[in-house]
Structure formats: C-alpha cells, structure tokens
Image 1 (cartoon, helix red, strand yellow):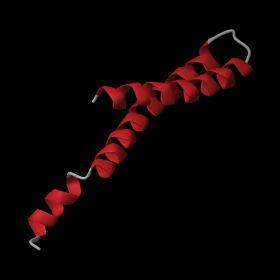
Image 2: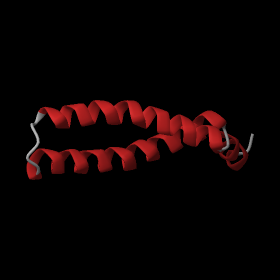
Image 3: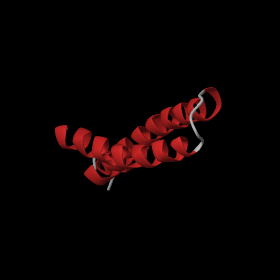
Length: 73
C-alpha cells in the first residue's frame, strides 16, 4: 500500500474526523469558559460559588451544544 493512499484513507476516517472536530471545539469553548469564569470570580459582586455553578452548567451545556453541532453536519 502506498504511503499517500494510506494517509489519505486514515485522515478520511469518520472517527478521526470526529475526534479532531471535538478537540477543536473543546479548545475554543474551554478557553471561552475559563475567561468568563475568571471575569465572574474577579470582577463581580457575586458569591464565588456562582462560578462553580456556572462551570457545572457549562459542562452540561457543552455536551448539548456539541451534539447539536455534530447532528447538523
């Protein structure tokens, strides 16, 4: 088997494509969540526990959002 054909077939595998898409999604979404949580924790008059509640909500919401994005493709 030629190396370019093998590599092309490997890169077109649906499992690998899903993994790459999920990794990019988590990197961008995670960075945004960290910034928002930091703003909540440092610049607001809210109790620090609200940051924890926000992180828990974002964990559930990110799964929902990823499923919606994945099902639309």
